[in-house]
Image (tube, rainbow, N blue to C red; front, side, top):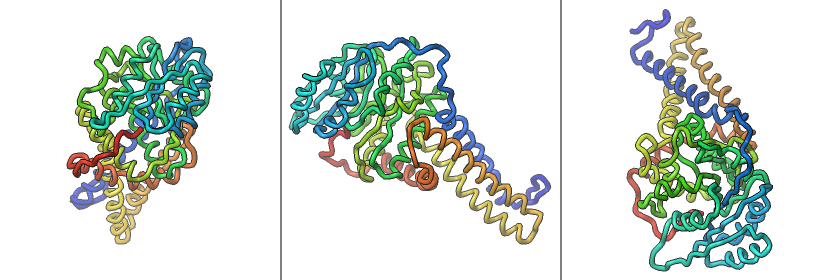
Length: 392
C-alpha cells in the first residue's frame, strides 16, 4: 500500500493516479502553451506594418477549369497596389488554357505558363511550382491552391503585413467549405499544432494553400528536395528545411485566411494524411510524427482517468472519505473541458471558423485512434497505388 495525502492506495491505484496527473499536466501545456497561442497570441504589431511591397501570387492547376472559373476573379481583384498572379497550367486536358487567355485580356496583371503533360513520365507538384517561382517578378511570393479563394479582398494585404526585414516565411490557415464537420474539425486541430508550434518559435510545416515566403529563400536553399515525388508534400518538406526560430511568422487574422471549396472524401483525406506522414520522413527527426505525442498523451489521459474514476468510485462506496478523490478526478475532466471551450471558441473567431465546437469534442476522442493507425500504415505501407496523380 502507498500513502498519499493521508489516503492509502494500492501500488496499481497509485500508479494510475500518477499517470492521470502527469498526462493532465501535459494536456494543460498543450492547451495553454501551444494551442492557446493560436487563440490568445496578441495580434498587435510592435511596429507599424510595412509599406505594401510588390507581391507575386502563384497557383498551380491541373484540370481545374471550374475551380479557376470560380476563384480566379477573387485573386485578381485584391485591394493591393502592385501584384501579379501567375497560374501554372500543369498539363490540363480541359479548357483551362482558354479560360486563362480570355481572363488575361481583362486583367493584365495575370500571366500563365503551360506545361505539356508527359504521357510516359509523371511529375510532382514541385515542377509547376518551380516554374511559377522562376517566372515571378517580385521577391515576395504567396501561394494558393486553384481550388481555394481568398476570404476577402484584404487577404494579400493581411499576409504581406507580417513580413519584416527578418521575416522570410508567413504561415496562413485554410478553411474547408462544403465539407463534413469531422473533416473541418481535423483541419482546425491540425492548424493548432503547426501554427501553435510556429508561434512558440518551433515551426515545422506550412500548407501550400496559404503560404508566403521570399523568392531568394527558395533559391538560396537550392529549391525543393530532389527526393520529392508526387507521393510527398513539397510544401511541408521545404518549410521544414528552411523555417527557423526567427524567420517565421503566423498570420492570425480571419481576413488572412483562404477558403477551399474542394469536396474531400474520407478516402481522399486518408491519402493526403498519409502523404503528409510520408513527407515527414524527409524532415528533421524531431518532426517525423508531429501530432503523435499529443495524440498519445490524450489517449493515455482518457484511459487512465476512466480507470481511476472506476477504481475510486468502488472504493468510495466502501469508504466515504474517498469521495474527494473521486470528485477531484471528475474536476480534472471539467477543467480540461472548460479550457477546451475557451480555446476553441477564441480560435474559431480568429480563423473565421463556425459551428465546430460539438464535432471538436467528438474528434478529441476519436482522432488519437485514427492518427495512430495512419502512423502505423505510413511505416508499413500497403502496395503502391497508381494513377492517382497530384492532389491540387
